[in-house]
Length: 233
Ligand SMILES: C[S@@+](CC[C@H](N)C(=O)[O-])C[C@H]1O[C@@H](n2cnc3c(N)ncnc32)[C@H](O)[C@@H]1O
Image 1 (tube, helix red, strand yellow):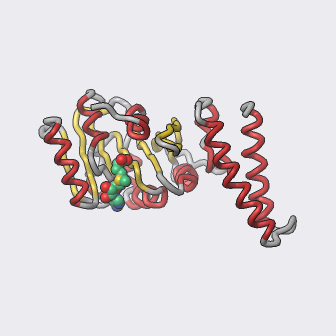
Image 2 (cartoon, rainbow, N blue to C red):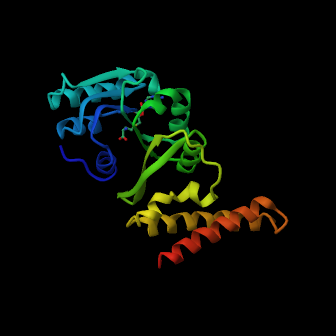
């Protein structure tokens, strides 16, 4: 099995582990690939809907993984037992859903050695949620698939609750900067364009220098632009 683009990056970020749980698995390609390459000993592919699980079952059969992959129906981390999975993947879902599912079963998320999160939307909510709840982001990477960029976050619970960060850290991801991610310039340009529209829209609506929200949005635009310039972009 050869994974490409977004799924390939998620797969690349899975550490060697014992039991891998894939929450919102759909086709179960990620756990199948992890099993086929001995990245994990056992996998649990979970989904809240039966349709996706039928696709997961087809993958299990196709690759003869019946004795190493379990398919489970359930909401979020409810589908796994306490301390059962050492690595948990939550990919291809929105950031709001991902953070809600972690919050609802926070002790299971804390017990995992590592969580691999790939939010499709509202990614800027994920980082502050993790910091406030004692999770540390230990790796983050970008990938292009089609004309879109996707980010993957690898995190784990340490108990250290972070208190301070800048708005830009919620949006860009410090590990991308630290690692000099090859797609960071493009990622920044996309966010700068979005932020320019927000600032222009607020100006047009009459926001001025006495408006705190407007000043915050302007500062974010300036920080994004400065970071891009610092990178020589
Ligand atoms: C777009 S698919 C992503 C599939 C795969 N993880 C990927 O990244 O390609 C999202 C999957 O999440 C599942 N899902 C949505 N809400 C869920 C929940 N509360 N618990 C478990 N799975 C859920 C959906 O049924 C769907 O199969």
